[in-house]
Amino acid sequence: MYRWFDERLSLSRFNKKFLNKAFAVHHSYFIGEIALFAFITLVITGIFLTFNYEPSIRTVKVAGKAVSAAYASVLYIDSLPFGRVLRSVHHWSASIMIAAAFIHLLRVLVSGAYKRPREINWFIGLLLLVVAIVTSFTGYSLPFDAFSATATSIGYGIGTSIPYVGEWISQIIFGGEFPTLHSIPRVYALHVLWFPLILMAILGMHMLVMVKQKHTQPNYARKVAPGRILGVPLMPQQAYMSTVLFLLYLAVVFFIAGAYIAHPIEVYGPPTASTPAVKPDWYLIWVYGILQIIPGDLKIPLPFGAVMNSEFIGSILVPGILGLAAVLLPFLDTRSTKMRYMELPTKHPVRTGVTFALLAFLITTTLAGWKQELGLSAGQLWFIILGSSLLTYLVVYYAIIFFWGRPSKEDAGAV
Image (cartoon, rainbow, N blue to C red; front, side, top):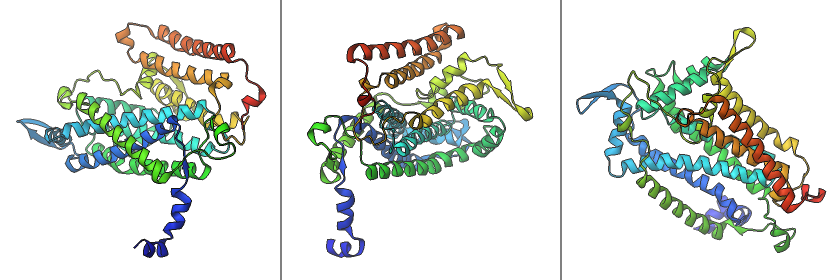
């Protein structure tokens, strides 16, 4: 049977070309696989959820109370055997995917693996993180409880704040001023069809480029296998390790989902005229923190009557500047053009210091999301954010110089 298929599909050629490709066994490389496992889990649990979810805000009766069909269908999912746990697995897997993708990008950043010829995969990784965050946000509105309606309304306001095209974009995504009769079906289609297809395409491109270009080598490969790609073939060694890691991932995420049920909608109840105090999930709360410390009446006039308001500056402009800096990084840092081995963070104090300063910025802006609970003013929080970022850079930079010395020209451009 194998020979029959081999004659028609050239399976032996495929096996020789792809299944024997060397895959890295360094522990840091498995972070990217965890992001892939989280996406697979999201797809599987999402299929179960779509079988029982109704994307509609038509009014139905539940225990004599009028609620939306979307809200009622989520209550029905929670009533099914393991339904609440599977919905919780879906929620936590989204957070794990975003966290793993972010940590994976940090590894690429501190090791200098974004340089030529790997700029394309760096751009693909950035796009993957952005699309994953947007996909997760589109899932906010689907339970259509008080929390979901309020959070999505904030997202709608952010969309409309984009100068010139904001109203047009928000109309396409939400079908009008949220919530309208078409809002949930449109967001549902984006969440379960278009964005997952885009994520599949991005992940596929990422892995194809990685297989084509080979992975960067850990530094110990210089001595263990100089001039060669160090790793194990996809079949069977890498497949065995990935299967074990995937099963371990499922065990951990199911334990978390069972112990910490995500988003119990009955606590929030259906949408009402009053607006509950809500905060976004951890991967967006730093943006929420920036919005808390920017004056709400801030408006910068633009040509043709457009304005940049506080919502656009805090939620679009600042993240956009960080994203643009990440995109330009491979073109600004060109010291190594044929890098094969990962660069040590201790050999690049400026880049390592900037990376830790960025983490300090994200952590402190996240804390700004609790501005009212902390009882701090916007000025105090700005001082903490900017001061901690600058202090972190100086401490990391001079700590590397003190303990490891200044890098030589050869270290700065390792080949």
